[in-house]
Length: 252
Ligand SMILES: [Zn+2]
Image (cartoon, rainbow, N blue to C red; front, side, top):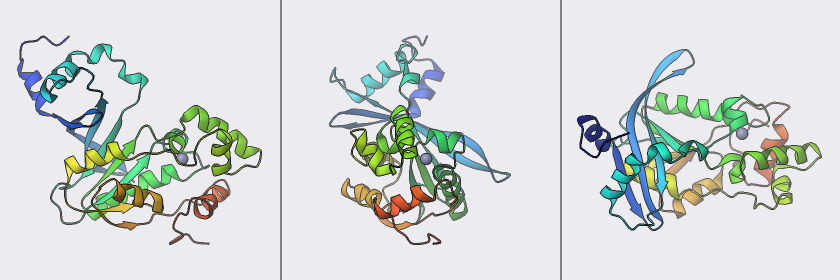
């Protein structure tokens, strides 16, 4: 347990935690932490940050809330509510041009390499695009599983898809809106890391619009299609026909 006295390591820790106050509480960002990553047989050095949303129910100033957070980590049970994080590459704060991706967590695609979607491919390839470009960031959004419906519901949506429903129909059948994702959190973190404009890696016009509407400084978009197979062709077609994804670059 961390004592109340300011040990050197506690001071170092506090220097790496920054807070942003907003209407519904505080966002605490920890980092940068050096994260060498294996990408296509090469080691690429990213910087990693994680963030945590904290309700400010006690109406504490930021610094006091930060102290309280550090002291209560061991009892906060954070593993039960997965946190989001961001990988940055190069001089993300000041480089003239930077690419970003807002990547929704995909347990099946990113971790298991499922072919039912193209998430794992998009994650790896956006990391490659960013490192080749020289500057950028990948936001990995932990509360966006299954377009914001959660993992258990996604499993049920997959079962409904086996009954012939498409992605949008399955989500609506379970009582969800087609897309329940919100980008306020990562936009706050983006603004903390960089004020200059960014180019968004996405095929999704709604994502581009949502980010612009929420005040992100996004100047444009590049698409990322690939990894099309017999398993995800219908899923990708639905994205284009129902969710209005850009067709640019889709090779059909
Ligand atoms: Zn996926």
